[in-house]
Amino acid sequence: MFRLIAFLVSLSLSTAALAQDQVILAGNLIADPEQGATGPATIRVRDGQIVSVTSGIDRTNVTDAEIVDLSDKTILPGLIDLHVHLTGDPGGDFWKQATEPTEWGVVVGAKNALLTARAGFTTVREAGSAQYTAFSLRRGTAEGTIAGPRIIAAGPALAIVGGHGDTTGFTESINDQLASGYSCTGPVECAEKVRKASRAGSDIIKITATGGVLSQQGRGLEAHFSDAEMRSIADTAHSLGLKVMAHAHGARGIEAAARAGIDTIDHGTFADEAALRVMKSNGTVLVPTLMAFKGVGEGLGKGIYTPVVENKIRMTLGEVGKAVTRARDMGVPVAFGTDAGVFDHGRNAEEFQLMVNAGLTHQEAVVSATTLAAKVLGMENRIGRIATGYSADMIAVTGNPLEDVTRLESVHWVMVRGRTID
Image (cartoon, rainbow, N blue to C red; front, side, top):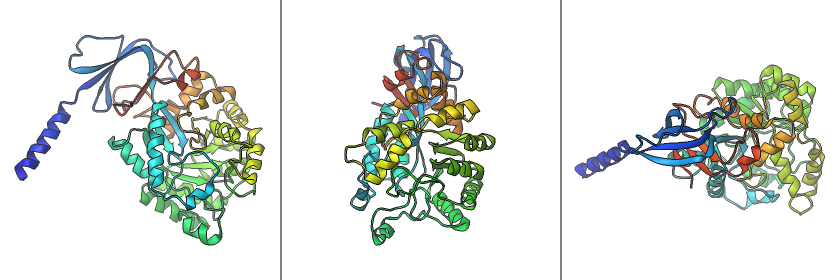
């Protein structure tokens, strides 16, 4: 038995050692979207990493490698979406959380991970899920068991009791049974919940800093946590080496979250000049998720949402995109995120045109989903560019997306960590 095990180990190691390099022939390379396109190039990939990038298409001396001929395409870094919910699909049937087991989220998530990768998104920030569903998906895509993007997972969001992100809409006895255990009151308890999330495996802390559009309460969209609670969350997370992302709509809630040291404001719908000034001074990044509003707007009047939710959707639609315009004019970084799950997964790239409509240039929109998004994640030395030593996360499209972002809505080829997505 020992000899058989030794033989199998030896066989697997020798197979790994003989893994063939991949050579990608690019008709036009955008290695760094901030720098623009540089023309034809040859990219060599080994063991999931980029080992060389050379100018021109070199078909010689590649007998030891698999050639991926994309000489009629533009190659650019894999896209990054900083706000997705892989484990959920759109719909207003909030009651399903009382009828479906949390494990079902992994099944749904596996489907959506593949759709997301096929759409060209090779890294995502999972912005809230049941306790272990996103963590399971994270492991599955990392190990190659599930086809999908790299996942930076938050796990359950921290919320105030009865607020957006907490379980509501049922009788109190049912709410208590369904609650994830991450609601908190007071700075001490909120710090404890951050530590609990860290212990459970969260890569980032997600909080619902203000009311939400799709929750069942009709109490407005301003601040939920107190200033002291948000400072406690931010300080505790940062002490553990974790960043904090905040769902936030109302201007004063956005301002309070930025002042507390929250790293990204997601949605930021009603961000005004005062809120954006605080964001700029604190280095807070706006992740506007414009597709979320397009998605929910498409569902109005169809019986999908309750009357309370429909009223909140209508209240926000007139403000969508205005914060992006203000943020750009004031020098606040605007990074890419969609809230996929509120709308159908796989449509993520439609966000680019909405960002352009809100005032970004086509190039700025692409940068927001590559180099800037990688910096937001603290991964700018691993992803977001095509360079030696970086993860082999790349996509191929027709034409130049730096001049026309709609090119990104039709992705021809995707590679995640050196694995080609079917």
